[in-house]
Structures are given as C-alpha cells and as structure tokens.
Amino acid sequence: MMIADSAGNSSVMQEAMRELEAAIHDARVAFDCIGLGEIDRAHTSAVTARVAIDAAVTAMQAVLAQAPSQPRDAESPQRG
Image (cartoon, rainbow, N blue to C red; front, side):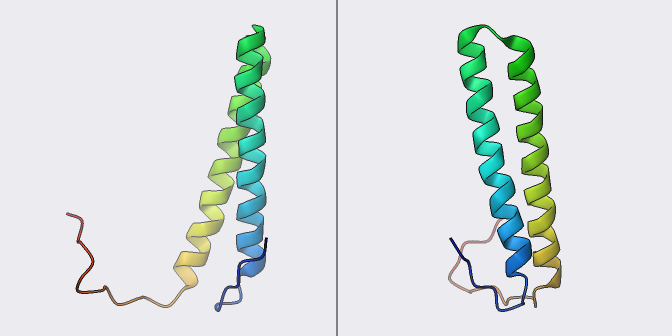
C-alpha cells in the first residue's frame, strides 16, 4: 500500500508501515508462544514487537516535525 505524502516523506512513511507490520507479526508470534507455553520465545517476540513500534513512532515523528504546521479546525474538539 502506498501513502502519498506531499512533503516528500513517503519512503519514511513506508518504513513506518513496514515496522508496524513487523510488530503485528511479532505480537502474533508472542501470543502463540504464550499459548504453547514457550515463555522465553514469547518474551523475545514481544520485545521485538515493541522495538518495531518504537521505530515506527520515531519515523512518524520525523515526518510530523518536517510537515508544515496545520491550523486547527475551529469545529474540532480541543484536548486539554
């Protein structure tokens, strides 16, 4: 799947997507390993899933930092 990025960061977003897919896979492996009683392997897979998520977050933060600031929509709810 290709996500167009007007800032020219599509390769960074593709990497984020790959990392998230890897995290999904690793989380599923961890889940299955728990069911099989392979706790050490489950732990390893859970850790690698977390690392992949962290890498995806880092990539998305880099894209957001480079993106021009977007004005807030007056109708959208504000957090606070």
